Image (cartoon, rainbow, N blue to C red; front, side):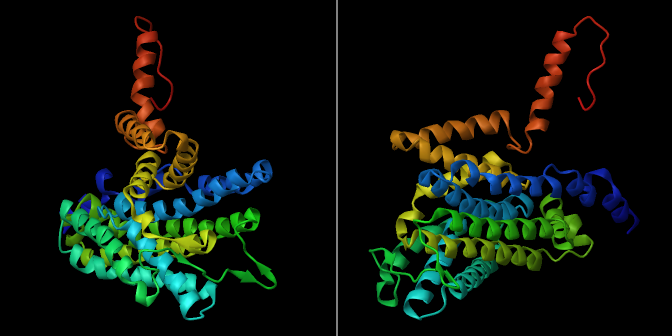
Length: 353
C-alpha cells in the first residue's frame, strides 16, 4: 500500500496537478464564450456567416463530447456521428409523429442517445484499443441501412425526415430564416454543455477516467471501477451529443442518411485533432476553425478533403497537441532558434524555455 500511495503522490501520476496545469482553464473558457457571443455584432447582416457560426456551435458540442471520450477517457470510439444522428432522428420523430413538444423531444433525443451509448458501451468496454474503434465504427455504418428500412416507423426511409414542428417560446417561433435568435439559443445550450463538461473533467469522475487512461492497472489497484466509470463516460458523452443532434434537427428542419457519410466523420475528426486531444476547450476552437474553412473551401468540391488531409498531416507533425498545445509544441523550436541566435554569447534563455 505504501508503494501505491507513493505512486499516486508522484509527479507522473498526480492527476489533480495535471488537470490544474492544463491550458484552457475556467477563465479561458469564459473568455472564449464571451468572444463567441459578440461575433453577431460584426456579422449580423450576413445570413451566410451567421449560418456558419450556428453550425460551428453545434459541431463544437459534438466534438467536445468526443474529446471527453477519446482525449480524457482514452476510449477510441468512432460512434460519435451515429450517436448524433440517433438524437436528431429521435427528437424529430417524437415531435412529428407523437405530438410531443419539440423542447421535450430534444431532451428525449438526448436520453435516447445516452441509452444507445450504453448499449454500445456494454460490449465495447469488454474490448480494448482498435477493437473498440472497429465495433463503434460498425455501428456508424449499420445506421444507414437501418434508417432506410425504418420508413414505416417514421424515419423517412430513403427519403429525408421533414415536417418536424418548430421550437416555440411564448408567441415566438424559431425559424431558420431568423439566425440571431437561433445563434444565442445554441450559444446558451453549448455554454451549459461546456461548463458541464469542464465540471466533469475536474470532478472525481474525471480523475477516475483520466487515471484509467494513464495507468489502468494502478487506477484499478486503488479502487477505480474501470467498467462502471467508462460506461458513465459513454452515457454522458452520448447525452451531450444527442442533445446537439436534436437542436440540429430543429434548426435545419430536415435530416437524411447523407450526414452519416465519410465527409462529416472526417471533418469532425479533423476538428478534434486540430483542437487537441484531451485539451478542452481546444475542441471548440477546432470546430469553429474547421467549419469556417470547410464552407469557404466548397468551391474546391472533392479537393477539400485533400486540403484537410494536409492540415491533419501538418498538425500531427508540427502541432501534435493541437491548438491548445501550440505553446508546448513551439517551445523546442523557439529554444533552438534562440540558441542559434545567441551561439557563442552568454545569454540566458527566456523564462519557460
